[in-house]
Length: 210
Image 1: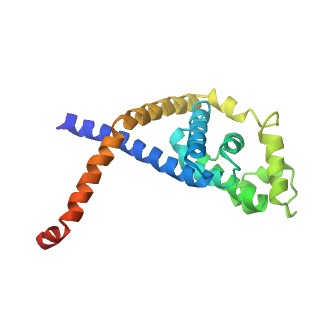
Image 2 (image 1 turned 90 degrees about the vertical axis):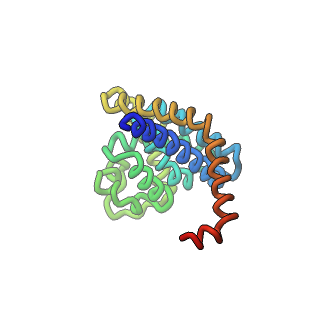
Image 3 (image 1 turned 45 degrees about the vertical axis):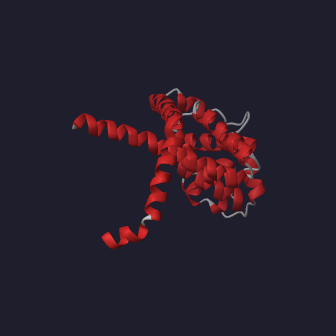
């Protein structure tokens, strides 16, 4: 019984990963305008997760916020890099950081309340109370947290820690689950689709039984 329960939990984890990946791919398709661009965005996200100390699962949950302020799938790479470095410097989790980045890139640094509390506004060199546009905010983040900026290597340093190593091991297991799920996911959807059709065809009898 314990073995069966364990096998069931393992299978459930693979199915959950498959559902999460599929949902993200659908979201990317609409956010980036096409299946191809959405797939490119997902592939870029997976590669990014493989070299940074944040889990692919966590990055996936955050990606919707970042996709909103990205011009295209390749531009998402730039924003992912900035987000990772900001998360490493501030100590915020990746998902929270992504939410704050989305607010800052859309409405200026003043729209990101948590960044003010964590001193990010001061790091960017903006005076307290000064009105800062979204364009100025994006430019300053790029100067400090991307390319050759002062904090552009923060995620690389964090990746050398034990926490970073464990995170990347977790990513590799997540990728394994994703690849396994891809092998049976279409068949599983077909079987559940047949069950849904059966329930729909027999709705009246099932209602009477209920």
